[in-house]
Length: 341
Image (cartoon, rainbow, N blue to C red; front, side):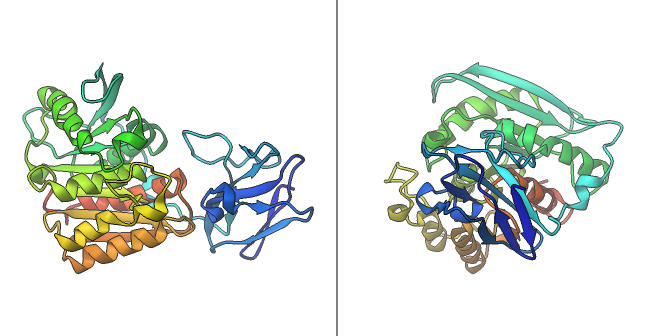
């Protein structure tokens, strides 16, 4: 048996070739890996939680537990496996039936100017899209992952059909090099303004006012979304960030050097309140970004910024972010969200 659960403790049995255990509980840092000693490894986890892990081999590289077929939703790496303690909560919005008429997804592609290479985006219009109506629009970072893994377009279709949120257009923007583009990079705004929005606005009836525009992202995508949203009240009025990578500094380009990076964006919020924003933040309780996200939520509260902050019994992964999508969607597009209209 690869992993068993006793109360709140997960018991991991090392497979052949494993030298150490990593996962959400080690921040996926290899230097914090739990070494294999010959006996099963015991890790205490939150109640009703979802936790992802992998084994390190003799070469120091992660590999999937061959005795555990419970895979994660990770669209980028195949090695994470999961252990569930109790029952991880599922939002009821995911259980609503798909409506008979759903939105339509359009694919865009062009040669990049601000950043090199072929750029791609999906534009999801709501069911019953009417070009005579102006719709609020969200620019979603890590677009393919949010579209395919997060299924945000599908969730919007369910919520609109149920009358829980107003119709909107979602623009799923795929990055080139996300560590470059999303790390407090002002050129990313140039990219959105010069290449993404003109294409979307030429073909779709979306708001061109700040009151009808928002940004959405996870991890580094959450960082750039809140950074741009906070600094440009003339362009954006809402931000959704999941597990925001709020350990960053514009003068330090090494994304791995979180020790020296500090929490520059939080300090900026404290210095100049982005009072124009409505912000939805959330984070997993077993990830290293929990303290910075809690402090960011506190800074927004102190600054008088309209926001919600939620925590999930899981880590820095797509299970956490997909669990968080419904409440984020309700917060920024529900009937009590008057600014995105």
